[in-house]
Image 1 (cartoon, rainbow, N blue to C red):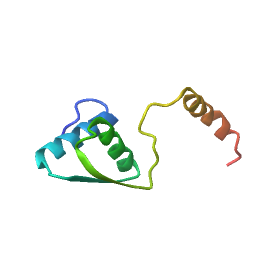
Image 2 (cartoon, one colour):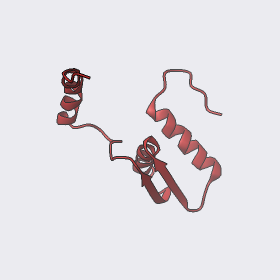
Image 3 (tube, rainbow, N blue to C red):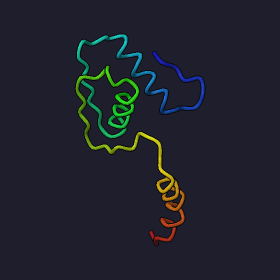
Image 4 (spheres, rainbow, N blue to C red):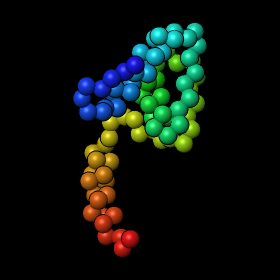
Length: 87
């Protein structure tokens, strides 16, 4: 029943997940996340470490946190580097 009144944000998904968990109020929560859902689950555990009993991650990376200076630089360089490819 969530509604967006502004541009989509990752934090909106976290807030919706938290509202759902609070509504269900499980005794032992197991979160299963695939791809972006895995990133979301990792962020949720980081924000609410005591709320999750088990975590299963499928086909995702640990990229839910802040980027390092080198990672931000690499992202800025991606467009010019990829544009050099002939495809």
